[in-house]
Image (cartoon, rainbow, N blue to C red; front, side, top):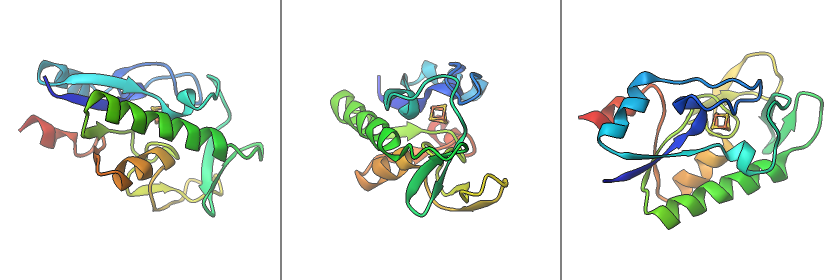
Length: 144
Ligand code: SF4
């Protein structure tokens, strides 16, 4: 069965900054066709649950309380890439708009709810290394 890396929160794991999950039934249902490997880059990078909300500003990641959490985000992203390489997964389904997992659109770093073009830290690293990245808006392509 083909393996796919999936943001753990999309499978209902309560790993988000506020201690919740964000399960999407359609993604959970892909387990009929794929082996789903749950990952949370922020937790893999050593950050706790719950944790302050973070956003990317000028290439670095800051929590809303001003703490620079770039190292933790990069470390978690590296561990997700390692998991892809070790498991042979060439695809990932990541949570939209997250500073780790977001693809194409992320918040602008002001914590004002403004979206700009860009990728989360883990998404960016996976894309740079040739992993196909989907999110909850286009994962349905994997079910064709
Ligand atoms: S880092 Fe990714 S997997 Fe973890 S809670 Fe945020 S969006 Fe979900």
